[in-house]
Length: 289
Image (tube, rainbow, N blue to C red):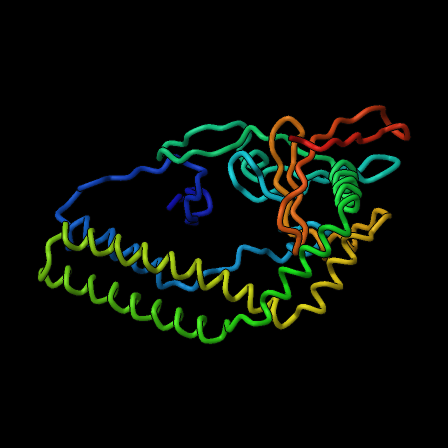
């Protein structure tokens, strides 16, 4: 807490003043290992808060642009001039902290990635769509064949079975913590079994996600093929439609980016350059190997 001696008010120290941490200041009620495990379990059982903020759907690519250097989400930067509004997307780590650095607690912050003007981004998406249309017949037939393959696939039973297996493993993991806290197993035994259960749960959750996606494809095949047609036959830049067909965009350094479209298996990898200023400003795109 910080005390204002003039107004006699206290406020929480959120970084305005240097914070002091005293490790092992007094004898703990529980040991450090038990505390760390309790915190880990608390985090695991906590409700996962959706990362999307109230602004997540404001723009056509909100929540879809990721940094390819550090993995953070990208945020918008907007500037007003006399003639127009300038908007760009930048890695949130670079925007908040600037260049990479390590804070007092050892956490790495910041990023080297640069921003991308929204005009460049729209031009790149349009170019990517034009590139896809060169292969539209081949892609359409391939996707039709793949989707038809899901029709004889019984996803419901597999989903139910995997959910039961995950629930059983979660139960075993919880009992494992109780056994350790009751000192019925050693820490070494606890760590070994915890890794085993965590690995099994992660693998089954990954498989469950894939099967659930296949199940959605199976029951929405007609709608999906209609969406694929929209993507393949789109000729004019249309950001409002891009919101529906762009799955994600990954920005890399040196003006490189990967664009992923819904239901299209592989990304379109692009390098872009810019020329001119004002009305003569242009974005030149090329496929990146």
